[in-house]
Length: 408
Image (tube, helix red, strand yellow):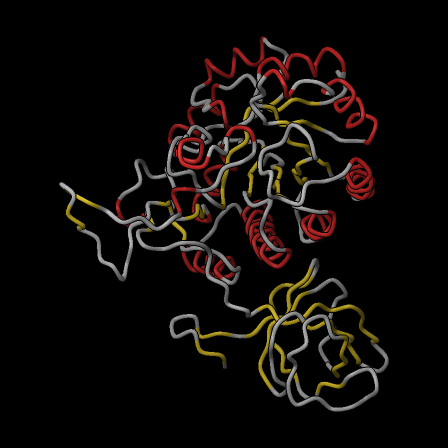
């Protein structure tokens, strides 16, 4: 079976390292110039250099987005920035503008150029065009069905990349102008206000027809493609991409960890049962996110694939602690508190080399060895005794009956 890349987002240096530690083969990030997602914690050149060195130490890659569709005033400084990225050890640039794409190839030929999903590439003929332009990879439109991805990949002269998880645009990807019209924030220049997720009053003939307690919104459910991963691997897709440069470290760790295990299992066993699909869907559901659906994989999304009246992501606060250290001799683990919890409770740990494993948190002590009755100070350093070895860099979360949202 072909080696397939798991590509994860990162909004800052911490999340970059978490994504790679938890199983991503590469990360994509935004610099402080020429990148969409202007509200993300975009990387300085020094951060990019450090991130690229960290990735290289793991034989992994960093991709940087240059996916702005530039106006004339956006172009100064492009050459200096591209050469700085090349010098920093970046592997590839994700580019939307054909002018920038060809220019990068002229001045920094060692950098791969990946054509952004902003171009809505949906067929192998379009990919042939990009090949003739000297490009290295094409990110397919998120509006492609599974059958279209399979057919395009089979006939593609370049490696293709597809989205498998994360936020979906209510319009054709990157082509919505609601934000431009309503807020003067240009979605294709990094300023999307996500107007589709706002709450709206709806009128017909000047008569309000909305429920005042449940205003209208029109956003899409997030994409979740667990059950399609085997077909994508078989189709020889080059890269599976997770969306979410503004997501939390816990979200990145949870989603990357689950897809990493899924990919590895299928690559090893060449099969994935319904039971295992359900397991991975449950693992991914432990991230803090919106309801999910199949996107366009099964065809045009239906009404139940949209979010009407829902705005934003649900926050469960089930992520309760990071593992900082573990002493195998004393069985003492040092934790950093992230969210409110109590001693004497069932919990679950997962980490870069740890599958999700339940264990019981008993007494919890502060650094002065005082027993604590409640953990309600985020970032507090505490200690617990655990016969289960707890891997540094692992994360601990509450255990839920997810059908009832009750903590065990």
